Image 1 (cartoon, chains in turn green, brown):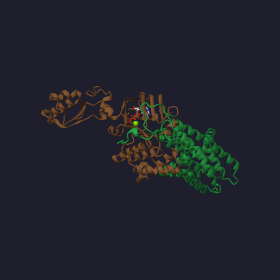
Image 2 (cartoon, rainbow over the protein chains, first blue to last red):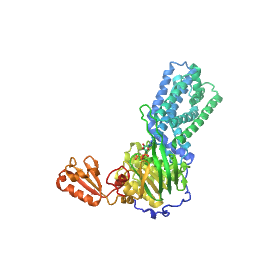
Image 3 (cartoon, each protein chain N blue to C red):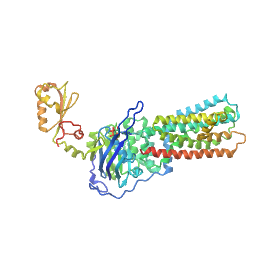
Image 4 (tube, chains in turn green, cyan):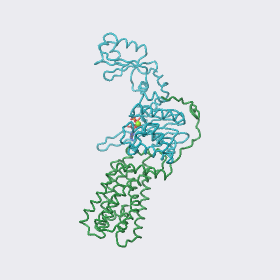
Amino acid sequence: MSVVPADVLPGGALAVGETAPEPAGLGPRARLWPSLAAVYRAQLSRARVARIPLLFVATFQSVGIMILMRGVVDGGGEAQAVVAGSSVLVVAFVALNLLAQYFGQLRASGGLDHYATLPVPPAAVVLGAAGAYASFTVPGTVVTAVFGCVLFGLPLAHLWVLAAVIPLAGAALAGLGAALGLLAPRPETATLLGQLGMSAALLLGVLPAERMPEAVRLARDLLPSTYGVEAFARTFGPHPDWARVLGDLAVCGGVGVISLAVATWAYRRAAVR
Amino acid sequence: MCAVRGLTKTYPAARGRRGVPATPEIRATDDVRLDIRRGEIFGLLGPNGAGKSTLVRQLTGLMRPDRGSVEILGHDVVRHPERASRILAYLGQESTALDELTVSLAAETTGRLRGLDVRRARAERDAVLEELGLTPIAGRPLKKLSGGQRRLACFAAALVGERPLLVLDEPTTGMDPVARRAVWSAVDRRRAERGTTVLLVTHNVIEAETVLDRVAVLDRGRVIACDTPTGLKEQVAGEVRVELVWREAAPLHVPEVAALRDRVVESGRRWTLRLAPEEARTVVATVTGGAAFAALDDFTLATPSLEDVYLALGGAARQGLVKA
Ligand SMILES: Nc1ncnc2c1ncn2[C@@H]1O[C@H](COP(=O)(O)OP(=O)(O)OP(=O)(O)O)[C@@H](O)[C@H]1O
Ligand SMILES: [Mg+2]
């Protein structure tokens, strides 16, 4: 069916045993921001189609935990911690757990080849996916936070801080999730690690820290989502200490940068085998 | 435009674990040498597990070879694997990265990641979807399409954002004749207009004969022949393939039939023989007359195909094949 003989082609056919030609002009490289935007858009559309039921699950889980905890905590600081922890748990469910699963499966099924054979910066793939998963958590997190405030009688005035908490905690957790998914030797392991990470966020983030043994508190300090939870919890007080809120958010952002950098490195490693 | 020298890749042995048997190491690419010329449709033909995908994954920078060199348009792809993505478009055997996107978004996103701006990416997306007849299903997610439609959508994504080399790993699996024709005419158009080169992986012999300019036959990681389809067939020219289908079993009580037995490839009721023309005539005369005829269901005589070449070269020690 190939009707065009090779030697009538534009540019002239090269003789057999052609001598090494000058290196030809390479196609363009995709720049970071446009390709990040393209990946983000594609991932968000995927998430919309396939993940909405899971977002409901995440939200119901957090709402359920708050209802359970109502009988346990005695208002005040503990209630603030429970509401903040449950809200950030939605982020952990999607950004850490689901993203770890996604990258684990993509890697195992050879889906990374698609991105690896496009001239796209690794950071664009990782950040685009992480960003999409983090934005996808917004409605669930907001619903959980509002419900929690009403349930425990906390003020709604400073909920705007979620606009900083979600992206920063989202970056930290999504980076962690992506790295786990890309580094896990098998997709089952990636799923398991994602689940474990989420359980950790649940236990360490939602349960009041004061009641925990020392070792667990140390683990809590190591979990990136903790600082998002703390920053959020502080804003419920009558006179929030904004400097410490900012400090916690800064730690969260710093961990986010590190974990996304690790995820990008993991992507590079996974893409070329 | 693409020169491969001494390319070798061995998958390491895997130790057995509980429930997972150990696998020995596999030399999937074994000292491969290839030269692909500009504007050529070059094929890699071989059975399952011959090492076709492993070979193209090394040419696309996805896998680092143990040894050897790959040069595409003057670029050393082994040393600079990231350059491959700016020279070639790759259609792999898997589509998982695109599965949950719509056909249209898959094509557009791929174009943008190939460095096109939004406007160009959309224009090229529309043109390619139209060219391949995908416009009516542009809004549907790939996962919800049939296997052939999905494959065609992935092919569309590979075409958005022009590249001088297309590397296609079994692009037409699962496609109906209409879709296949759309693929081959899209390939031919790019070749005629822009001199696009195509490296095609296939194990479809008929496709190989009709679309390829040259073909390398791969077997257990080695290139065992490389020529035009016609040139390869000349290696078994002077032979005729005779196929005999018996009603129930071969009439081995007929001495002429019994004498053929050690030269046939048997599969059930079907006997395949490769013979010189005069010999073939004698065999046909024998089985269509006399005692053997009652047991005969059907017979065909055909000139050799690439499949015969493959079998002849495969070294599978089948008798009565190539004399050379
Ligand atoms: N990741 C891997 N690890 C170990 N062995 C592998 C791996 N991938 C492929 N192989 C082995 O390498 C050999 C070549 O595989 P390859 O996938 O290249 O074959 P192929 O010619 O593309 O086959 P097909 O026509 O089925 O696509 C096979 O024996 C296969 O079992
Ligand atoms: Mg293959």
